[in-house]
Structures are given as structure tokens and as C-alpha cells.
Length: 307
Image (tube, rainbow, N blue to C red; front, side, top):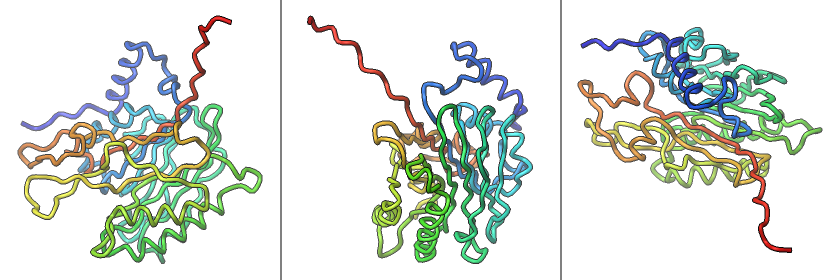
């Protein structure tokens, strides 16, 4: 039976109806957090071979202030999955035309940007970085979207990109605001190689960014994508490719969680075939959306001790 897809506008309306039914006022979604940033590699996104309804629903459910996307082959099609958002797209996309995009929810102010950082393109072969300064309610922050070189064989080029990224961070940070909040997020493709385990690559990357007061966040589930694995059978294996680095908030205030298949399967291997595809991966991406939340500080409970 051919699958019937709802129009993205219908999906968005359904999310709003759910918000009203559960007592969340329109426009106040996520107001328990200071900032919400969603990142998702959409696996060569085009309208004709992606389930736009599923993508729109997943993005809407995250209630993000800022949405960062990678592997966008058809930027014009983003309007359907991000209704009402201000969508900013990189000009460069490397040899695969995999553009980056940053989308701002209604009410999020674009203070400056977007700025495209071609140093990460390595002569045009891979993707640039894309940055904006935004104001989310009472918070001003920098967001830098990245999609680094893929595959274990690409590690040497990723190392060059790390240095370019460090220079980019320093260049966008205002001398007048040395402690401004910052989020660097996206697909870092930290696979390691035959000589360097993936965890060691992540540690080496963190060491490059640490002098810039950026510290790493990993999804709490421990993975962010699924791949065919070495057996290349119907079982997909979890992997960790999507990361975030933050500055300007305490460790306790910031968290990173993976949604979709990564959350539903708790990063365990999963079985997906053409006949029985996994519901969270079919028509969307082999990556999972990752949501960064900056939580508001909670006031201490009043003391009940006798004077």
C-alpha cells in the first residue's frame, strides 16, 4: 500500500493543537529553557525522496529556537519543513552540493550574519562553516554550524578543518564580549581511523577547541546516527558523529540528547529493511536529530527551618 503523507502545514497545525491541549500557550513552547538548538544531518535532503511530513513533525516536536541542518541538496524545499522560520543557507556545499542551513523560529532575532567561513572548505572540496549571532528571548549567543570531512580516510583533512574552525571561533567572537555564549554544533564525522579510535579523535578535537573556552557535549544516549556496519546486512549499527561544543554556560545548565531512532532504540542495533523500514529512519535520514538545551536556573526552595 502506498503511504499517504500529510501536508507539512497539517503536521504543524497538529503540533499546535497538541500544545493547546496540553496547556502550552502558542509561542511559549520550550520556555522552560533559555535556549533550544536542534541539529540534524538530513542525508542529502531533496523534496522528491524525503518524507517532508515526518521531518516537519520531528522538528516541530523539538520546539527549537534555532535549527541547524546539514546535507541540504535542495534549499528551496526547506520552507515546507520549517513553516514560518527564517531560513539561512550557505552558498557553498562542497563537491557534493551539501549546503548547511540555520533556521530561526519566529521571535528569534538575527543580530548579525549569516557569515560563511570558507576556510573549512579546503579549496571547495567540502562544506564551509555557517555562523550567526542571535537573540533568543533574553539570551544573545553565537551559533556556528559545521559539517566536517567524512570517513576514516578523511581524518587528516578534518585535522586541518579543526584548525580552521578554531580560527573561525576566534574571528566571530567579539572583543567586547569575550565571554559571550556560543554553540558550535553539527556533524563532526569523528570516526577515527585505523590507527586512532573515534573516542581519541573526539578528545583531540576537544583539545584544539579548549583554549577557546569551548567544551564538548555528547548525546546522552551515546550515539547520533546509524550505519550499515561491517556486515552490511539488515541490521544497522549505532555510531556517534554529531556533537556540540559550548561556551558561556555552566555544565549543569547544558544538555545534549538524541531523538528519533537513537532514543527509541536506546542506541542499540536495529533491524530495518525495504519491506519493513524503521519508522524513524525511513524517508528522513540515517542521522538522528540532536537537541541542545540550555536550562533556566531553578530558585532554591525556601527554608522551613525554625529561626
